[in-house]
Image (cartoon, rainbow, N blue to C red):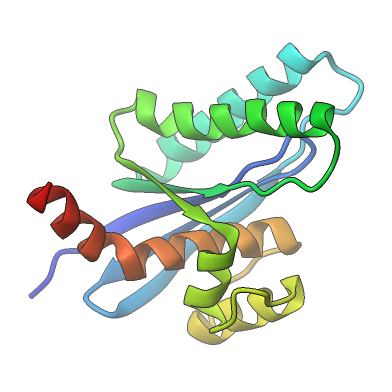
Length: 168
């Protein structure tokens, strides 16, 4: 019998940071929880990043995942937007890593392809497939659905990633 592994998926963002927790045992996926952190937009950048750090820390403490997965962000906006998003992504990587969790990173296209079957799927398609794969999943908004999709992607790729690291 295979072990149960609890995974947090994180969809980083400074305005909305989605998180989703699943458990995987063999090929079985189980929904555990999901939500979105929304720091107030009137705070300074440092305050907002601190709120993300604290909020993600509380999620990690509450659900005690074994592994984390974070989406690599593709930004087609301006340089300033990319820099700010990169800082939020840094918090999303740092928070689980500082607690000793292994953190994997996945491109958005790979997440979509792993969950929907197409790397160019729309957000609505991702949410629908998350609900199809885990009918008991409860989430509000695209950010939480995306975070669950990131966790599902990691569940599908984690064993292969571990084997590649062992060979390196």
